[in-house]
Length: 483
Picture 1: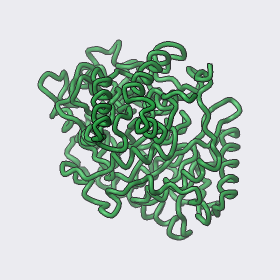
Picture 2: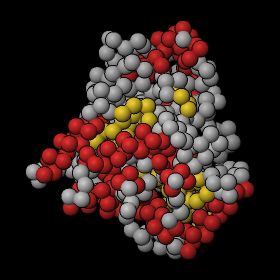
Picture 3: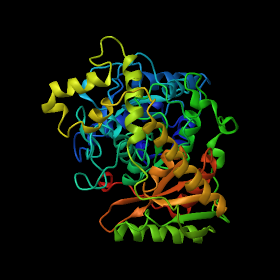
């Protein structure tokens, strides 16, 4: 019998409707697996804390279901939240920083409100790369001063877990919950999705509200779903997407705002699809064993009826991507977020964070804070010519000369990248990507296949990813779950 922890959302919903088990049963099964594998056994360390109200929320969902009042398709289903997403409950919101380790948010993030209204069980907070991997150069993926190191369940202590939504990716892979929410500025959903053999959807910037998410850069920040299957990720995306009057970026994309992404699931979506391959630099630098996985994936796509348009080139300079926009936007955005924290918070500005880290350097600065210092040295007013020109350059290279040009010239349905190698250009464009498990190297390293498109093409990408997933079924569970 399949464990409740390993069931898909559709299986869980069916069992709940049939009365085979309850939401309390599902939640307790997830908590039991957390107890067995988070700090014990392989000790993946993906969960920072569990919601003290989780079982009560589950019991309430069961009561509503018994009365015929289940509030939504994910009612009673456990969901984990990355710990840079605010929740106004018994859990902290810390972004992995000791400076915020005792901080309770004053209000739910907009996406959290949507999850609560749908009756989801907010199970807990996931560990992450501290400050979503914008604290210092060469920060280890999955490390935070508050939570320690997240381990990759496919090779604990040996394989890179990916960042910065590492806890969300590892947790879903192990079955701590069927669904998790991650965030991405550039690769932070796609990287751990690939590394932990799960599905990650990085949506168009503006599809999901950013309100209540500890920011890096408003031009690229977004939340997104992580799950073990494309269908499960699509179900969660449907719930997360929506307008938020407090976040202007969600006022765009009206034609796609409220669609049901489960309707995009189509096993024939690859038939006749034109998929572009930009070899340089995304494929040329791959390790040989990763390249082998990708070549097999391209062969599979052809077998599914897709036309591979190979040898494409964005024609961009190697050094066009840098931290300029991030550095300028980070100070402005973070100061605004921290300035709205309750008075009891230890920090209310980037300067406060740096001072706290300096005063607690033994525990808070194991890897330094070079990026925090670099951002603090800027004005935070976003008036500088260097910033404005850098943002324009990002848009020109990623959209006009990059993704838009190549896709239009070659009449493509999507671009296909290995793992998260194309995350940077898609992130700067604000465009969507879907990463799906593509297989494993001889050493057991997971490799994802990423489909990327232009703005608001999530449904098309989900269809392509689903068709590939269903035809190949590459994903396997971590070995220790078979013990």
